[in-house]
Image (cartoon, rainbow, N blue to C red; front, side, top):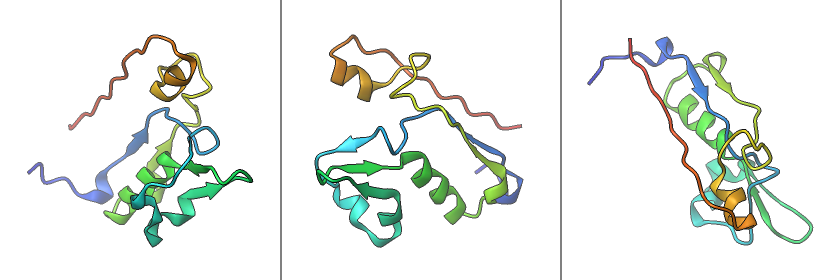
Length: 106
């Protein structure tokens, strides 16, 4: 549609929840697939920790985007008050906010 070549893309992945913060009591079937198991850890209580930014990065690489042109923000929104986190807010019982994403084609 836009005739963009993967090698011409520069990608920035916004602040988001990190593996150490994103904990689930169960593993979703999608993450049991072989391609995603390296992005899931289980702790001593058998809870799952999922690396969502890592999965997004890997999906881009699998589509032909160069590793060198993908930058992942180090900010963990579950622990940073600077950014909204549905995950954090739902656990604290506070009012939810909004998050916006912006994309640009030149």
